[in-house]
Length: 207
Image (cartoon, rainbow, N blue to C red):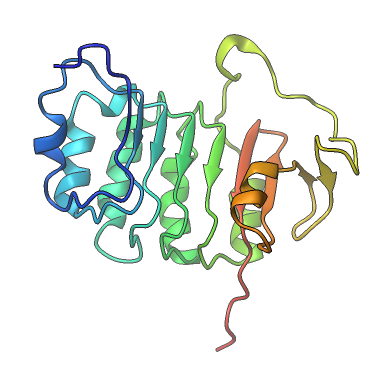
């Protein structure tokens, strides 16, 4: 059924424990799978990592899941299986703190084609984000062999602006700002690796 299907968005569906049942009859591997706020459990991610979809995925959205506890290791295993193909990864509002990001970093850096990483809504410190960007990424050239622009975006234009927490070159996410009015989004591009990172910096409570 649906032999030509390559992209599937199931966001906000109640899929807990049922992902295998949903995907097992597809005849071709998916390239884009959006599962934001789907109440997934470890068994769902385990199935996905072992399925024929994993090595073909270019876009994966797992936003809205709690990766602070039992889902973290299944996520790491899934990212290992998608590391050769993944271009776009959304992990927004996933209750991740510095320790969870640190646990994922070795696997994330093996995602050699990754061009977008969405971490908005996680309680990450500036130090953790700096660590994410400063260490080497094994990123090859973008799809089609077209490199990202080497120069900085022009300040004050729609193409981008400079500054913000952590420094660096920034791009304008006009569409996201329209959807989330009043929210200070901080899209940061790691120019040396060709990686675009979207995050919001939250203050880390003092202990």
